Image 1 (tube, rainbow, N blue to C red):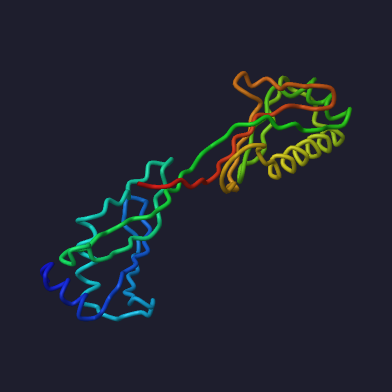
Image 2: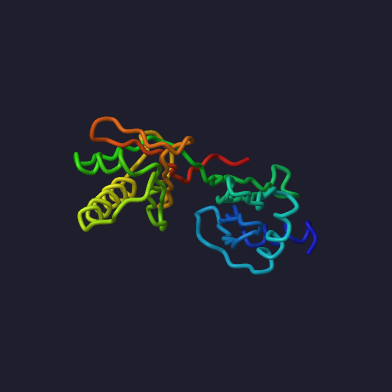
Amino acid sequence: MEIQEAVSLWKELNVHHCNCTFYCGGDAMGDTDFTLFDAEDNTIHSDELIGYLDNEMYNRVDFYVNSDGHYIGESGTVNIELNEDGDDFYFMKSAEAEFNESIESQCIIALSDDEIKFISENVSSIFGGHDERTTLFYKKDFILTDEKVKLIESIIEKIEETTSNFEPEIYDGQLEEWYRFNAGDDNEIIINGNDIKLFIQNKYTTFRDSE
């Protein structure tokens, strides 16, 4: 179908505008959904006209499909109308781009006197995260008594409960389940009274206006 035929069919059907919803990302164009409307917003059915507009849209509109781990994709609408002269179409995109961001924060774990003493004397570093086992690195060999086993289990339980429920103070978006924590760049545990300080990285999804 040529542009003149599409315009004629548009006018013949009394189409006022066409709305296309779309999503793209992951290096591919996702589903699109076209709907034709008359001036009173009643729907009009024409597979032929929608087929033309679907093909032509990719010549008129830029879609950003290539994800890179930071940019995820974009979603929105393309509104299609006749131009002022009534001999061509306007394609107007309105969309939001989705991004995956990360943020690092300090996370404080409150422990008992015995747990702090055990950490200070025996543990050199700690790391773990979502769907990861919390691991304690030890400074030295020691006899693993029942008492020490209970201390280790209690320490790990408190670390996992605090980190899994941790939420950064400032972020703009939707927090994801994923997180990871460690003792810092030097992998030396910072102890302040009965608290230990861990550094936790969280990821969140945020949206911005897309061009």
